[in-house]
Length: 219
Ligand SMILES: [Zn+2]
Image (cartoon, rainbow, N blue to C red; front, top):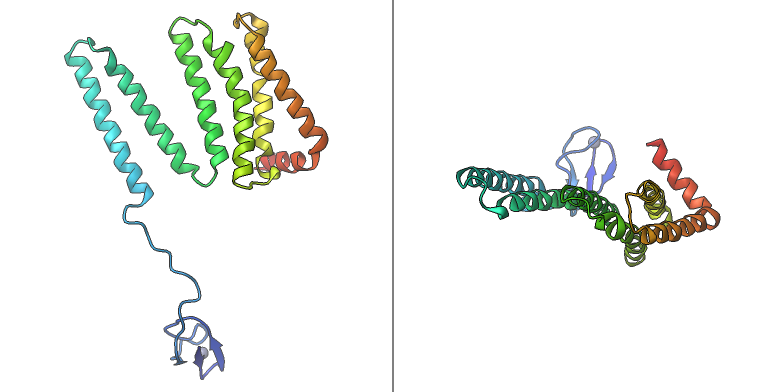
């Protein structure tokens, strides 16, 4: 332990001078009081910049190829879309790496929107609103609970995701009531299951739900 003869204080760790009087210290320095965090060779920010650069190069190459071949190659535009999806996915994964549930939730919501857009864009055969979206809402609730159990996340932390899931699943009423959804059974069942879950949360877990929604809306 180090010692400042002027201030008559003992100092832990390894200091070059006294933190009070800046004077010279006596005694043997110890190992630092706080651990030194090693920086990774390539930080995540520069890794992401490299990936973004690769994406930009790829997109420019694909647009050029598309132009030179007079839009004859169908896989070109598909590659462009997939590259952007992969890039966005990586961004989400890096950004929310400390919150797996948030990451998975956002990815699944994006997947639902993308499927809806693809369905509408390809002539709206209805597979997105009839099957994909209803099953994803229910699947998302199950996955959220499974991840929380595996990672020992407390209900207070993840109940907001379940609650949001129930609320957003009710948007399916738009497709069901407007007649856009020609086969509404899966959507209706998915909403019914999630509403039962929502009612259970509101009745038996009201304390966690109240605290979680309070935090959410205060932000
Ligand atoms: Zn001192």
